[in-house]
Amino acid sequence: MKEIIYLEIPTPDTARVRDWLQNSFEPGTCDKILTSDGIRLKSSDTTSVVSAITEKLPNELSVFVWNVQRTTYLKVFRWGEKFSQEIQILRKLTDEVRDRFPHNYPEPPVIDLSKQSIFAALAAHYPLTVKYFQKMPNGEYDLNRAYWWEQRWREGVRNPQQPKQVIFSHHEAATSGFPLSSSSYDLIYIGGALGVIHAALMAKLGYKVLLVERLPFGKMNREWNISRSEIQNLVNLGLLTAAEVESIIAREYKDGFNKFFDAYIPNQLKSPILHTPTVLNIALDSEKLLTLCGEKLRSAGGEIWDETEFIKADIDASQVVLTLKDLSSQSQHLVSGRLLVDAMGTASPIAWQLNPKRAFDSVCPTVGAVVESGFEPEVWDSQYGDVLNSHGDISRGRQLIWELFPGENKELTIYLFHYHQVNPENPGSLMEMYEDFFHILPEYRRCDMDKLVWKNLRLDIYQDISVLVVAIVLLL
Image: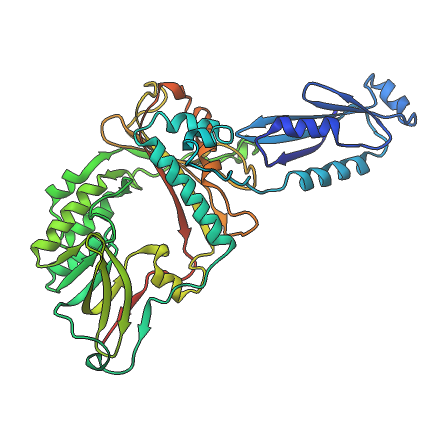
């Protein structure tokens, strides 16, 4: 018996593949016999009967399918030495599989939340996602947010819009083109997450600084991981004290593991686990860090305008004038500065204007959750982290990678992600990723999903930056 074909079929619906194989696939002149996992193909050609009888093996092909990590796989074995029209049958099988089951994520359903809840609308399509979102605080809100993110992302990839102009350049002096502003700054930061760290340091150096944030300042939906040497830079620069650094550390673990799937590699060629004890081994309380940096910024004379939206920037030879909207009062304000720093990331309208229609070439769909407790002690020691771990092969056209970071007390933050090229025909899917997450997590970490206590969720579509996305407008 010899394996003659091994195919990955990018769908979790193995039953549909088996049904197609048994009821629709036409192999040609040979007889098709149904089995529990696929089909047997029995040749009517007698030219290879002698060799088959000699080996006491049937003159047949066995075709069967199975499912691992929400991916369907197909194998074909030949029992004898030869099989009539084997090459033609395998070519036809491969072509029809690729045509019927392409590498495209299924479209999320169109739903009407005025008639049913998000849970009822999505239960048939993403059953495990709905089941475990229902167990989480704010699960209904978070599932709505994940669905909305996916719709917005798909629409943006398939129908990119001409970016709205938000940066306007003027050659004449400021006084001839703009009303004078009563507020003038050396530096204006738009974006209050990582932006506040740099803004606070510049304020301590004596610059007049304004930080603008669209959301309430200091709110984050994830922890940050960093190394000792990296966070020490903020101490060396005089922004934080050593005691303050210790106050924002939620957990420091001993070692981080890096391991990639190698089940098909001979033992002598397998690489050992890579230990990285000083990489991302510190979990920071991000909200404490932002609050602390905000206090440093204000104490050095800087200002924070949160719940304030950036509208546009007019630039001339001597200054930049920003139009901002106070979201609580809906009133607009003008402020001027010598330097505008865009800390809004790749969703920034400035980045989109500077790089028309697309500020990135590939993305990193990321989902995950914070688990308060529920893992058995022998499953994971919270003194250790998983920096990168892919425990499955390249399935459904992508390599899934896990991260696991210990947090405060018994908390574990777990991420699942992969890299994905921006593609209008196959935009990718956060909803499918969540279904992957809840389905594969027990295989990854040997846990009883119904015993886990969920704290909150993580989701994002990170951009893999291949062009400049942080815009700095410098006025001399």
